[in-house]
Length: 282
View 1: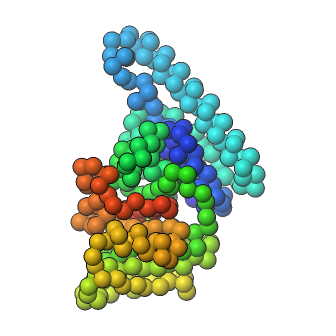
View 2: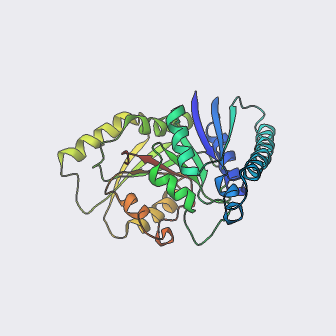
């Protein structure tokens, strides 16, 4: 049974991500719905409060969060009456990144699903600050859903690669399962002015073919110019439903995620964006 972590700040964006996950993973799964509420408890207003009042505030915030989450679950059950999912509500007085990492490790989570932005929803940013932290540091696949994205069956997947990454079976297994279940085609995009000139690249391409056990896998090469423009243009031209990228050390994606202001990222996907993590951070 697939294990799905769904961090929520009870915003419309996180609700939309929940709905997308329910649609995509319609086989029986366990949803861990996580709300970390330390930011709602600890502020300048609580610095001088006695411990009893701080504990009272914690309890009230937790109770209100749990009520709202259970309402959300009831709404999803009404929208998806045929589903056979299990829901586990987790409300912790901690900070989001720490709580997600602990959950991923403790429950061996298969994928984290969240909105690209949260409650603050600054439209000048590609990713909100919490989502950006998760993309950079959580050690499992992360599926980001853009604001107001309406679910479409993933029939065409774009997988940009330089073939230099020694892929991990577990992450590719998730992509393979999506391909197999929906009969999706995979379009592997190599952005370079040169062919596959190294032995490593050829080995990794063969491994990719074997792990993505589908007849509908297509390999494309485009000359390098502005990578982000190429990605965006390809998404539109091929009518892509899901973008998959691998985050590893010294990769194009990691370089983008390390920018001091993520709004400089010119890759602004309007479709779901699955990031596969290919390394562990210290």
